[in-house]
Image (tube, rainbow, N blue to C red; front, side, top):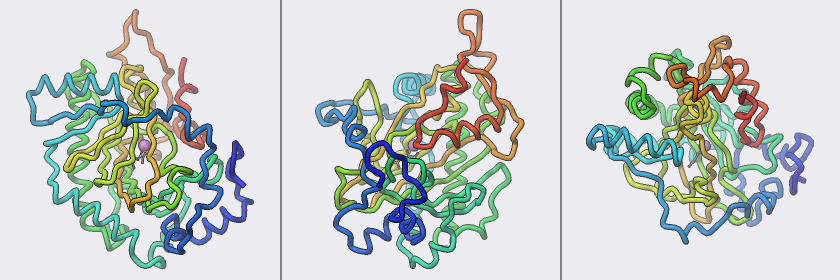
Amino acid sequence: MAIGNDPIVESDEEVKAFDDSKAGVKGLVDSGILKIPNFFIQPPYDHNQKKLDTNLTNLQIPVIDLQGEHQQVVDGIKNASENWGFFQVVNHGVPITVMDEMIKGVRRFNEQDNEVKKEIYSRDLAKRVRFSSNFVLYQSKAANWRDTLTFLMFTPDPLDPVELPAVCRDITVDYTKHVTELGDSLFELLSEAIGLKPDHLKKLEWAQSCVLASNYYPACPQPELTLGAAEHRDPAFLTILLQDNIGGLQVLHQDQWVDVQPIPGAFVINIGDLLQIVSNDKFKSIEHRVLANLVGPRVSIACFLTVCLNMTMKTYGPIKELLSDENGPVYQDFTTKDYIQYFSSQGDGKSGLNNLKL
Ligand code: OGA
Ligand code: NI
């Protein structure tokens, strides 16, 4: 049983049966369970840790209007990236119809006949199209109350659309086009925010891989015992997240969990571990989590802009132009291969970023 500190192991029959069902958390809910299986129960010390009542604070992550005055936008992004690691953007140019249709497409995939979903259920990270529940199920302390559909859209070669599930194929192609364009604009603004020329980050060609991870968080009968996503940081450069109107995402800020309020038509942007490293700790990759909810399902689509895993010898490190005698590198240079090692050793989402510290 996976209560307490023991990681989930493959020999746990309840876990094995869950994984073998290939039906995910939604399969459990559809079977009519009233109590969640033990392996979803978060150790209490983890669940309550830093769990101050966010309703007592008026804190909200910064919201940036991308159509605003240019210097104000850059300053807003700088402030948010240094102090929060998170911000929301509005007036970003992605049509709201595309955003709504993408959420609907993810719902259609999850709510279609199980047999179709089962065909692509896999834990093989090399598969460019895969569905699974808890991509780190084994080794984690407790399972997350969510199912995830993952597409490696660019690696950097583009995924052939025929590989995408038919129920969300066209909208995924359209959405990816828009969201990667937004990513390009954000990298320009982030370059300026850190004091570099607008094209600097893009020219480094470090974040050419685009992974779309669509999350489906079913309603949970005992939301206080588990989490939709346990506390973690994103092992990418940048995450562009689309969430529906249910809510549940929280960001750690000054030791308090702050709710990320759903704003219709907005994207949630967060700095990942890799951008923290190459910015030499100027920008912050911040812990976040998702609460489970009696109400659901909740859908979110994370677009991770990250390293190309097939370019194993490519090197990354603190951007030289940001370094000086007074500001020496905080991290060593590393290769994609080193990154993969750190990524796979981080298990429960605890960041191995410290391993790269000098
Ligand atoms: C993630 C993540 C948040 C959400 O997928 O890394 O943090 O709201 N998702 O689904
Ligand atoms: Ni995340």
